[in-house]
Length: 388
Image (cartoon, rainbow, N blue to C red; front, side, top):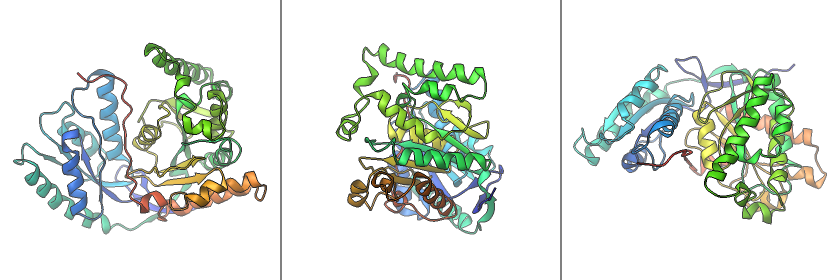
């Protein structure tokens, strides 16, 4: 089988990054604006806005903490400056200490300890300047596709999603898995009705049983709120695009998983423990599931859309794949690949899959996606509990 040699950055923990960012990581909503100011001052830094970090308890606290650490330890990140306020629940020091276990450079800046916003921004910018310069001295090294974790996602789906882009991504998923890589399937809410297909492909009875448990738990969350999960899925945009039921949407979404065995199910923002096809338990919300996969170690994400979306990540390149040609033509500045040629009958599913795979290889070695060029730095953590 033909192997692909890619070029990336080897990290101290042995993993390989396809980008070389310095992340300004705010552990509390109160520090997000200060972190943003640092990115405006220092080229080569990235950050994100969020509303979390305080008054969180139990499993909700644990999940947010895991997401922070996962973003900081993602191999696309060279080094991290953790920015906290000082009195929050998610203490910046704890996050920094956990990220430091990866061996990458980590520094902590507290707004309260540095006399306020201006002092903290100045200190973080000073540290970031040196960190970015050190990062820029690194040279890409060859690595094999088996070291990639690729996230898959569909957002703004339409009637073409399950016929063109999603099965084409499934074709790519099989190519990655066959070459020793890892593919993450997410969006549990959009697999309801198709779970039996994935359970039938589970590597053992334990994994198959967990498939049904994860689906049941997601449906029970909606019931506890007194609503039918189908009131949110398909969304109004999905319906305008031609989808009529959640099951119809799920059958299309499941096509991204290709045909290879399902190795394991993992929690939100958890790193896969096995190679091959992996299911991460996430909501259907595009940004929240994207964040979960990247926090779980995905270096690249394949994102299909029928309605069109500008979605991107602050640290992982997101390759946007259009399911139909009219939308691709209308949103060329956001979409990277057109899979609508399958619908038109001018190209085979396999041919489009090969184009997506080649784009993945180029992106892994440095080619920028449209979302990266437009600085589409989306971030959102799945909340599973109230604040107190």
